[in-house]
Image (cartoon, rainbow, N blue to C red; front, side):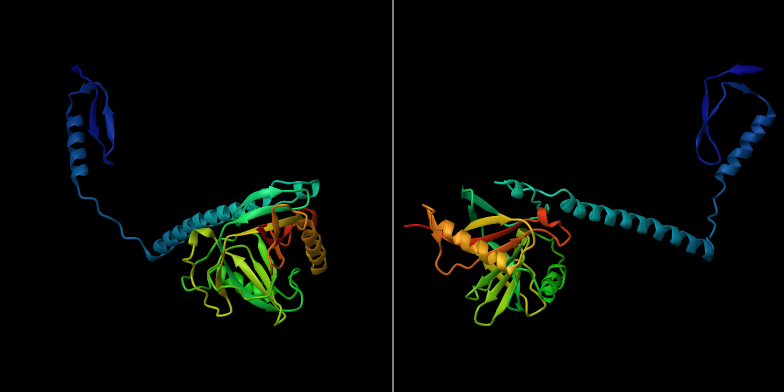
Length: 300
């Protein structure tokens, strides 16, 4: 006899719900199969123990999966860092030469432009921190013989400090001559090199990321010192190409002469020239952005 019933749902051996056709045959074979199915489903499942070989294979796959994930993150980080150099930012330019200059998209010293002429720009620079070290030599603006000093500061920046903190790179690199040693304080960016006239040494400094403020990790190398650069007003001239001491000297003289005609600002007594270099070594000369700066003050 055939009985029409709505579809029924029952559990298979695997525990998945399956549909039973709406036409049910009342036969002993169905009852027998159903009972047999119930006995099978109610039987306890025995878990098979993995062999040592299978465990090793599983571990290999797990490690491979983890390595792939790490590699993807590393590639993403590399791509992000590379993009900072491949897609640079540009400052407001006053000439074609300046328009071609490219600056890596890295954190830099914050400033406000107070005035601008065809020859220079007056900026009010906010306070920042630097890590500095001395380097021997009679020249410094072209970084000749500066690799050791640069490496010492780079090691501090990338983890050779009391917190083992890896800090982000900033821009520019500063180099400057100074007749005094300055006030010892904490670090910022960019990299500075300062010449101590009496000792015929230069100082190189890295400007530090602003997020640390005065809470920078202490350097493990005693030759690295932390300083704070106070708020100041500077006159700045931008130029491209490779930096050398003779060119810096000529540009400094021209800037000093131009500032003599400025109605509002004058060179601060004792001010020495500072050079900022924004680009990594592989940048083409015509795309490089360099700046010289002299600290100025308002005329009475």
